[in-house]
Figure 1 (tube, one colour):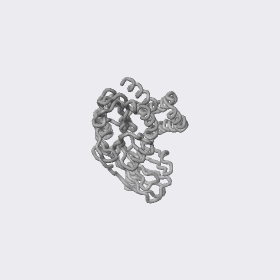
Figure 2 (figure 1 turned 180 degrees about the vertical axis):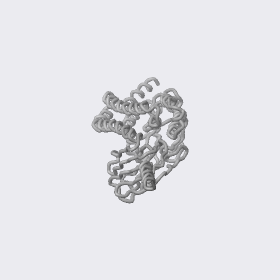
Figure 3 (figure 1 turned 30 degrees about the vertical axis):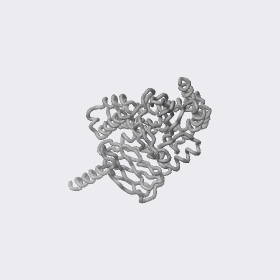
Figure 4 (figure 1 turned 90 degrees about the vertical axis):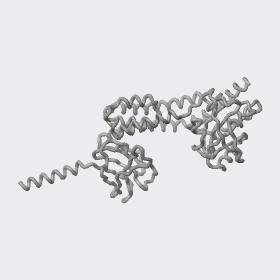
Length: 384
């Protein structure tokens, strides 16, 4: 009887060990003693929270799994060839398996637990779309550049329309996984990613979140999703959206000699003004500059003036770009990059950004490019 009891005890211990939660990392091409860590980003904490650490031996490391329910998780492989902020995976109870390939991180794989298997399927499907986008863009890059140089709107629209189709295809994958997992944590996880992309409307995100059960909303991923949704709503509500007919908000910045220039002071005595927000490091800005120069030469004597507002950080780079691109109009900058107040006050998400205004600051045109700028200037100045 004692032998049977002892055997049962040993079997119980072995079964317990087999069921113990682990995170097994196969680290291909990673040297021995390389440090790894698992971390998360809890709500309300600015820095990451490291949950468990270890080191690679013989190409692998097995870590104790700290997760008891689904959460966004990251694996960080220290001293890796690529400086990345963690490999994204699903943190959850069970035996998670991750394959990390040092020289081909795009082929990392995930499995072992139910939701990591779903996650692998999810990223594989999206990966096909991304490959198609990259292939299409690569095959049409020169064609697009030529179309932009020649102001071939038909070709530009054709290429951009196809890229939009790929984006929508990716969005449909997200919607599918969210819909197919409406009653579980993976569906909530998918919605959390959708909100983070900020490509879906607030109304759609709110509707989808409302469809989940109260129990799921109280889980870690449920609370993160709600927190992300609230921040998304707050951000959108605080964004400035300028439109034609609005008054352009006031600003102040310094010219190259350190003299303060405001919008109000610059508009005095002017007829039509183009406020061009750009930067020396911005390739699309520099590409558009010859078109602005051409229009300035053509319409300056008819009443056009330009104020170049740079969001550079380094004065020497800003001034060199002005000289090199032959931008002979007035220029200002606070040398604050994206921290410049004009970014928030104007709701600017990318540069170049431009606003054509009259002498009262009323917006007549926004982000006019290529032939669109010349056509608008001709239309406006003929009326004047």
